[in-house]
Length: 270
Length: 263
Image (cartoon, rainbow over all chains, first blue to last red; front, side, top):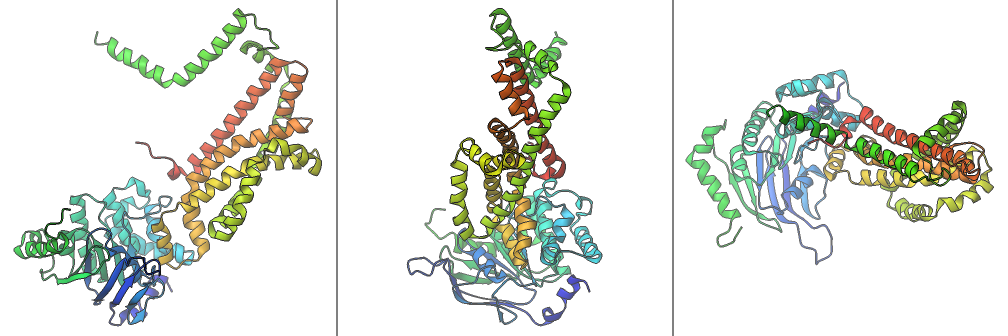
């Protein structure tokens, strides 16, 4: 039985959510060490798209690493499907900042890397799935190229479909488009929404772009500067599918203004 | 006028392209002139032409015997040092304790002049290949260990997180991520080591040998056959240069992705 479909079945079918209760973290237990994040409460429903925005250094990425099981919080609990997260899970895919592709592997082998790395090998049907993912991302003709022959946007597409290879239920994205130019960024955002509609995932999307957060997500967690705490949890009540028109709507402007108000406190020079 | 401009720029372009070769040829010509005009005796500084004559005076088979003796020792020492350096680097990268124990030991070995230790090694292991290979190995393995360890430790944390998020076994993290990431570092270590390997082999021959290019140079000098010694020296340099280039070619051939990006 191939590993991909095995992963897709089983416990993932149950109503799933990611839950954080009173989560805080400091890297050193001594009382002098400041908290990186503090008192975070967040419930993400299954197949919901939640964005986290906040000033740089507020611990957004720390939050993502806790859900990924790469970092165990010193305070509070993180759980997925009601089970505490104590190590990385098989049903979580991570999209890193700056694609994080391996420069010594072709694009196709980069997409297949999670299987190769986790199990040591992959089957012909896995390879077929990789090709389907490549086609979905419009990268078929680049499959045998090396990553550095691709543009930044294309590299990050590879990063996204690599995270989708094991068909995870939860997709964690750590400022995935921050290295891209504005035009590429907008396009790849819409493409991500298309993929998400076709293959629903629970998405935690870290970004420092307010417009990107409003454009893509169902809810937005706004964080304060360090130590990062929850300033607000905003429902994005914009209709889907979202498009260029969404950006021009008044509601879009209201929501971005609301978040801007939190991030740029009055009388504080940037 | 319009045609002279492209011609002029063409000449400039060619001159620029062959600048290193022209400089080298100029140097040789200057050397020849100084020897000829200044009547410098051959046993002080032989002229290039005298060196070339001396080179062809020695039978080809004799050159090959000496070359093979040196090359054999250098390459065996080089390969042995790769075989030692790679596992050692992996061990030092994986275990903090091993790093703390081995690093000072490596520094001690590296800061001990191999030339001074060489006679002792000969006493210990005899006058055959094993002692010469060990001397070569001692001189070559330090840069390899340092570059390999550095490369593996410099692996971006996101790549390691990718591995951790997949809960892959540690050996796959090492083989599929850290070692490939270290390839450019490993090759810069190999380029340093291969030239050191020749030095190691020659040092060993100076101490105890009956053949080899180092031995040949020493032997020629002691009989005041200075042009012949120079011929041996230049031959040795060319071999060393070819080995250096071979390491680069191997990198281009096997790991083209690891080369520095052209602008």
